[in-house]
Image (cartoon, rainbow, N blue to C red; front, side, top):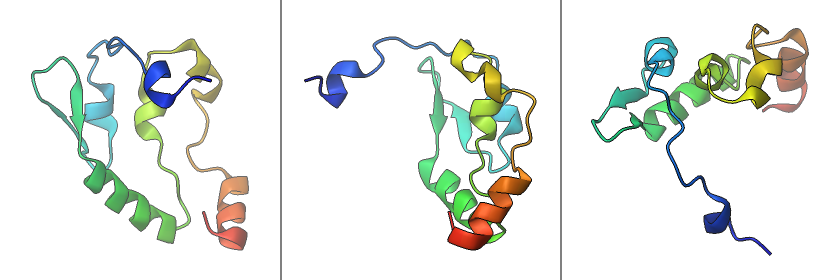
Length: 94
């Protein structure tokens, strides 16, 4: 059985395009000169709590603008908040 630490990514796949830095509505990302962007997880969480109360959760903008990963192509150019998502959150919460 693989443990979490055994399947973690071993190399940085970020291409430093800066899209997450520019598009994050909560401005969670900063450059830290380590080769990857630093993410303020508390700021991101506060943003999610706010938009959850507005029935717009989850945000996901950082992952939707990231050009890395063919597995994300099916999510490109789709509404971040769909009518079905709003309806679900209104009925059941997040």
